Image (cartoon, rainbow, N blue to C red; front, side):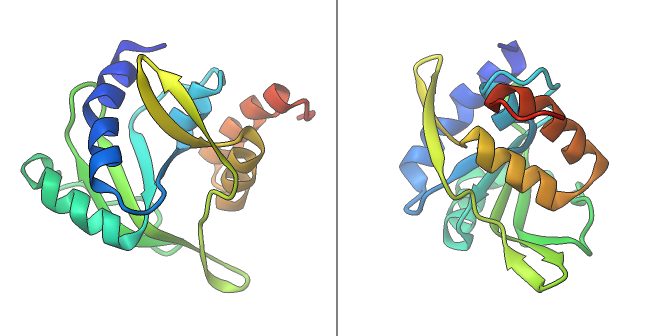
Length: 157
């Protein structure tokens, strides 16, 4: 596993366990990498409740990247903040919603699993749930990641 990913997980996950009262999960490229997909990881995307995003923002405020603007604000909304951590930046999305045919719909991970990475318990969606989330996002980068995940659960491209 990549050193940058290991460093970021070691720095962030203990705080997630300590600070979050509601379920949280990694999504995106880091979650895909943790189940074995051959993807590059540019950041950690953390899906939390709005309340827990507020708590984490307070906890991590000195690390906040105020200059960063999230992608696709017309498609995604959340209590969002990006933070500088060793290894990789961390993006917290509290109460993430996706705009589609039915309007704004909450993004939820459904079934999750806990994987042990370097002695740290990391919550990620199951592969099937990761596929569903990435396909619902519909962006080219998400669809490329979904294609790399499909062989890991027996689905064809």
